Length: 305
Image (tube, rainbow, N blue to C red):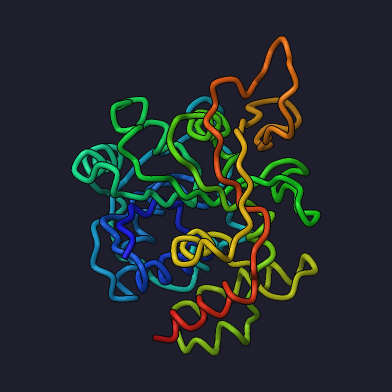
C-alpha cells in the first residue's frame, strides 16, 4: 500500500479522491492549502469529510496565499459556498499544526519511501523545498493533478490556457515542476476523459458523496456537460494502476504572468537555442492518455467496498 501525504484544497472532486485514497493508500496526513476554498475552510472540510467517512488521520494547515501573485477568488460557483456543496453543518475548527513542518519531517523520516499527492495549488510543496532543500532527493515522487497540454482538445478550464490548480499559483508550480523532484502529472488531458454520472454516484450507496456532488453536477449541466469529471481522483488511480495511463516524458515549465499565466509548457523538441527555458529541468512524467473505463470501474469498485 502506497504511503502518501494528501495535499489538498478540498472541494468536491478532492473529496472523491480522498475517499478513494482511504480505500487504497496509507495516508500519513492531510495537508491543506488555499485554492477551491480558503485554507482555514480546507482544514475544516478535511476534518468534516474524514469524520464522515471514518478516516482517522491528522490534518494540517498550510499556505494561505500564492507565492507572488495576489490571491484570486475561491471556486464557490463550482464547489458551493463551503467547498463541499454547502450541504452540511461544519462544527470543526480551521486551526491546525503547520503543514510545511509536517511535510519536511515526514519526508526526512521516510526517505525515498513517501509519495506526496498534490491536488491543489503547489504552494505547500514549493515552500517546503525552499525551507528544506535537503528533502528534494528524498521525496519518492510527487503525483500532481494539474496542468493542460492540449491532448484530445483539452486546454485550460479557468482561462483558454490554464488549469485551475496551476493558475492559482503559477510561480509555485513552475518552481516545483522544474525541480529535481520526480513528478507525475495528471493534467486535464486525462482527467476530463473520466466522468461519472449522477446515477453512477448514487449507485455507490455512499450518501456523503451523493449529497456533496449535487451542486457540482448541476454546475456541469449548466455548462453543457452531463456528469462530473473525476479530476483529482486520477492521482490515486495512477498509484493503483499506472499501466492504465499513457505517459510521455518531458521537462515542464509554467508561464507565470501575462495573458497565458498558468499555462503548462512541455519540451516538444530540443533544438540548439541561445536561451533554452528547459535547460537544467528534470524530465517529468506526463499522463496524456488514459484507459478511462478501467479507471472508472476500479474507482467504482473500490468505493463500493
